[in-house]
Picture 1 (cartoon, rainbow, N blue to C red):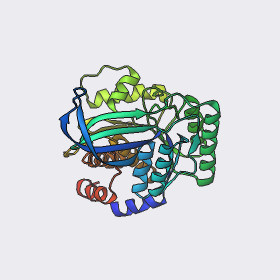
Picture 2 (picture 1 turned 45 degrees about the horizontal axis):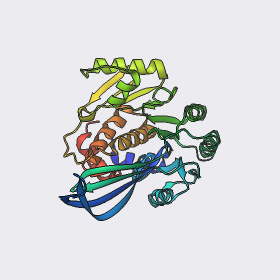
Picture 3 (picture 1 turned 90 degrees about the horizontal axis):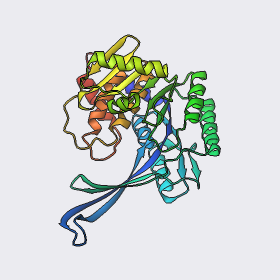
Picture 4 (picture 1 turned 90 degrees about the vertical axis):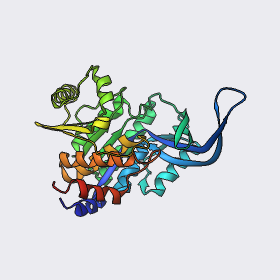
Length: 330
């Protein structure tokens, strides 16, 4: 595999992400005493940092790898939304399809951090489904983008915040299938079995157990094959790609199924690792149609971002170096 040529080719790949975007706010400080008012630590704040999260973090990862990246979502008419749009635009993410609505607020997850440890998280969000009017506007935005830009792949990024309703999922999936656009999904429990007919379905093991109401003690290739068949009966999808935490990743495409072990890392934070995995797997599959390669590279990328504190985009040069080092026999 000529990884240099593959990475250069990402610049010609168009990716559209649809789903729940959010702002990640980090308040960094030090803890030196316990509050006299209550048995809680007092954090002396030093600085504040804004990052993109949720579906926006998936877009950040594909853009960081050089792909032509656009995102379509719904945010609030608020300062958090303005900050989020500015952050995405500064990372070469096309935000023209993002809908601003006074009906919603922009999801903001505020993390209080001390010595790289999370002390507390505060969530500001609305999680109810979009109204019928916002559904129509979102679907129209996606339809226009697909017809005008012809992306190779569309990634559904579901965080149960209400943007991806059952109606939105069904209509956009049908639209993609009609137009030859690959679809990849990072699901959550609420709409877990709504993604019928997609190309690539990427839950983690916990989400699979919850979504299918399974009790699994031992993870093996045979048990994961059974999970794939159970998913296929419900979804009629093409590829199952399941992340297994410290055990690595599993994929099944047709009769081909493999567990790919994780690579040893110094883990600092697992936040956003799933976003990186779906981003890299989707982009590589769209560019090559090689799921083994996509799974191998996504597995490496997920480990790399776990070495960073907080949500972070994959470093293109680091990933290229690791792929050459670890996958040079492919």
